[in-house]
View 1 (tube, each protein chain N blue to C red):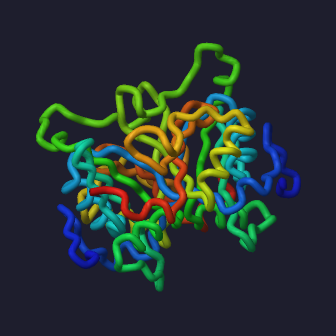
View 2 (cartoon, rainbow over the protein chains, first blue to last red; view 1 turned 45 degrees about the vertical axis):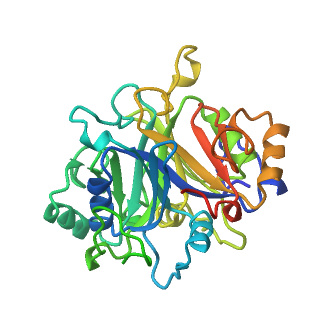
Length: 177
Length: 177
């Protein structure tokens, strides 16, 4: 199961038991859905596939994706829920009700201590155009493509301060030693 | 851009500037690549698409995906790198060299305080079979499908303690109020 000349520690060949497993989504907690949804729909062109509210536990879940050209999303809500959980590249945003009105409330981005989660990443067709688009929307940069040791890689912050890496796939060949 | 009867705060219609943007990957830091790669390749059937080493900065990046049936992954490494960054549903594991030998070293899972990132999620064709498979591999459960308020949803821990949600898409219809 390795590519030519590549060996990695610990790797095992997949077995039949994991057939059909699919990496569906990543969940991030957000303070204020209005700000987070404005950011992801406006700047990254995402669409809210589904919102699930849980009154008893006082939270809402927003499932977002950036639909591909020609992709058909079911209108009926139950069918759309099943469809949402059958995709790749979904972002789940969790809103615990009331955090949006607490002045001193903020989530942890995972890059300050204690570290863990690092970022999500979007690939884009044109990195320079994406940088200009982020500037036009006053998006905060962690680094631009020409800054730091990792050239051709952009990092911006979302509305909660989580890092988003932005790359152009064709410019990533040749990275690493 | 809303589905029938659904309105969400802050949502804006996507514009041409975000055409072709694609949610490519999520990055998690790992303590020990041998343990993390054994876990994700064995239990979730993922494949290491690409490893990038950075000698000067003393870290390695492992990009993993669960290829779909019939998907052709390029063998040539530069072409494979570009391909990797053009996909959805990729998991990037970052290994800062040396952490694997530090007994007291552990990353933060984002669910203990301070909270932020919550989990990644796999959808699977058969949730009961997946639970049995996790048991056969001695995977640690956070909750099983029949436990807690959120039925039909499984949470397990990966080799670093990050939470992985596991769902069967067809069983998610009807969730939420």
